Image (cartoon, rainbow over all chains, first blue to last red; front, side):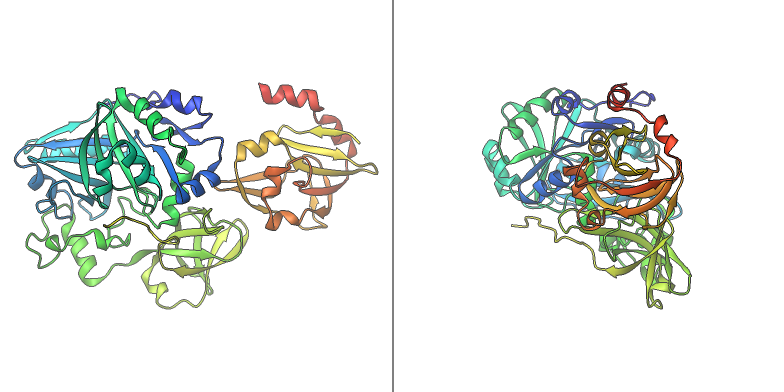
Length: 374
Length: 123
């Protein structure tokens, strides 16, 4: 585990500098927020062609051992035991009060071997949590010396199939272990942009070679964390620390879809995870708040933290993520609102500096998700 | 006409009769990244040096425009409301922000000339 406080870099750090990236500290790492193309064009490029993201700061963990699936199930409200071979599932680490410690992707690699990808800012806490709760039931292996690249966009499958032809057969939320030019890659058809695409886990020593190979295709451009955020916001995807946190249940974060039927009330393996009573009561009886999309009127962005009021001045909630959607060329936001006002309001306003901006509740996502389901 | 620069990366161009046009420098524009919204003050507003008079929003964040001089705002570049990208494309020209009638013209003496500003941003 890397727990020292000095700033960390990914195996692709030098490539980012060479590409002219603007580097910023993020979750303890020096990361590229944008490249000379700029956030807007990087965003549009990903929607139209293919963007390459270095997400090596994220945590990669393996759970190995005969009881690994059962053990992980005790920490998430998600069906892991019946997760098919080489398939992915979105999951949440819950806490005792039903809140969310982190969200993660789980891949079943077979032979009782699970591969997890967790948020960079949470990875140390997640590792300790796994070790202290299920460390006796399976081996919790924090993968050092690995990089993670995301290739996202409508051209991603063409680009990747040129160097790894069998990836064209993959569908959304499936995984394959492949050797590309002698490099051991774990490839998942997944991502965080709302577009079709892949995430590729590769040994750190091969990261530059793989990135260069992908960038040699003229459809591919580096895309930084700035556009990664605007892409996920348009796609209505939650960000830990914003739409979900330790103080709100998955139901209050509008992530009920992620709670497997098998683990809900009346399911074959209901409950038996941290905070199950609270989460199941929110599912069955309703919760006090939820997360919704907001369309601000006009051009002024409404950002994280902006308070939401109704026409009577009642405090209705708060913006959890807000900014500008380059693909739709207007401000967009996601907010957590109290249910009792959602049922009664006639108009809602976001408070931005000294102004009241009218906002309308809209369906998420703002931009249609384009996943390849076969 | 002479151009001066502030430590907040604004340019201040004198047009005679204590009139100045104010915008942000190319350096500032590059630091901010793609602009998506500019909130301008009202014509007729008074501003004093150091006061936040405008908000510049990029995809990523909101930044304040700090008045480099004191005076009365006599004109704003309302094209920026619909075309904030003018600041990115032509920060020293079509991307100007406001025109101010100075109330304390001697404040101009505290600003940097071009070579001093170029040294300032290299530090």
